[in-house]
Length: 303
Image (cartoon, rainbow, N blue to C red; front, top):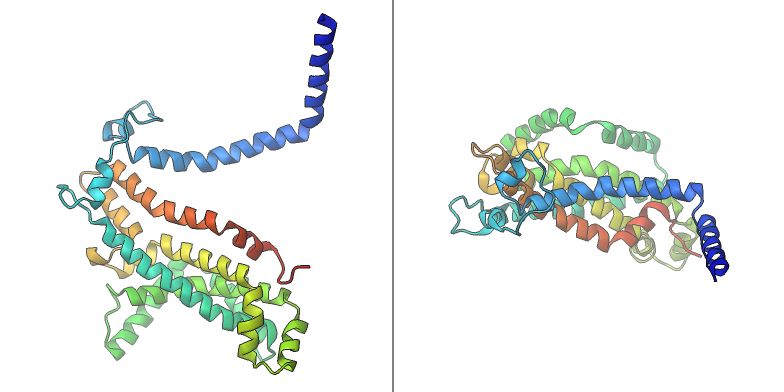
């Protein structure tokens, strides 16, 4: 009986050693490290939104709050709270800026990237290189000339540059459109031209070919570009900080910075607002993860 038990243990250890090689063990350790480094900050943010100031500011870290306190969220959304922040307005402003930015960027990028990928015209290579050069410039270098240009146009036409969400959308396009053009151009090049030529032979116009043939094949890329540009506009801080002065027009990043710089800082409220800002993008990313992976790695035609 003892010999049988020993043999069973030996066979189990042999199977276990075969299943988990040294490379697999190293991979498991590395994966655990990266998952922990990614997930733990998110957990800390969410848990801190339910903590008291004493739990957050204490010498000993509190990993699990004693109770799920909603005081921070009440301060953000409850008008009866003495420190009411009216954070719903900031959410609305962020949506009003981020969604049009993503939609306009995708529409403009479709026509621009299709022209670069399919049409022949003078200066095409220069245009492609210019797109890459513009994308490489950090936003802080572009903000001063962009602000001066828009201010001069505003004085000529008659609109105010500051506290104007429409102008902010235009400035976001200066950041998102180059990367959208670059991503869609590479994807359109993977779509065989024979499919589009067959559509042209059948009597379709160029716009009908784009609408009926190219765009259905490029749905993963379109979703990827839309999500990527939406995330840029959703999280953008610098341009919104320069162009917005009215508290009622602040986007979520500016409002979070305002709460943090309050004379009586409340880190739990900052963490609650950050959680509300982060969760929708995470859910959207997880819901459309299949399209994102296809759009960033797969070709346009599947066998």
